[in-house]
Image (cartoon, rainbow, N blue to C red; front, side, top):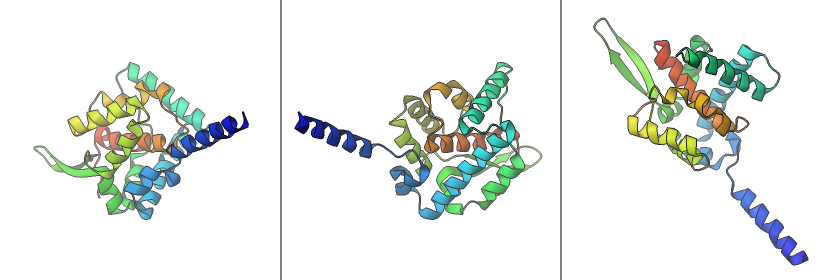
Length: 201
C-alpha cells in the first residue's frame, strides 16, 4: 500500500513538472523562442496592458478588472463595435520602446496606400516566433488552436477573430500570464488596425 502511494505521488510530481509554467518568465516555450531582452519586452507588453485595464476599471483585483473589460466589450458588441478602451498614444510609445528583434518576432510592418497618402500598418506575423508560442498554447486550449489556425490561414486577424476574447472568455484562464500576453498583443494589434492610426517603428 505504501509503495503504491509513493508511486502515485511520484507520478503526480512528474506530471506536474511536465506542464507548461503559466508565468512568462518560467515558460519553457517563451524561453526557447525569445532571448532574455525580448522576454523583458514581453513582460513590458503584459504590464502595459494590465495597467491599461486597471486604469480603466479601478478594481483591486486583476481578474475583476478583466471581467469588467469583458462585460463592457460584450455590451459594445451588441451595437457592432469593438471596445478597445486604452490609449493609442501610450501604446505607440510602448511599441517604440520595444527592441526591433522583439517587434519582428510578433508583427509585420507594412504600408497601406490610398489616393492621398501612405501610412504604416501593423499586423501579426504568421510565421514568426510569437505564432510558434501561440501554437504551444493551442495544445492546451482548443479555442486558441483555432485562433492560431485562422491567423495562419488568413495572414491576419479577421473581423470575426477580433472578438476572440469576448467569444472565448469562459474557456480561457485570465490568471495565466501567457494568455494575458496573447490578449494584450491581440488588442494592441486591433488598436492599430481599427484606430486607423500609424505606428512609427
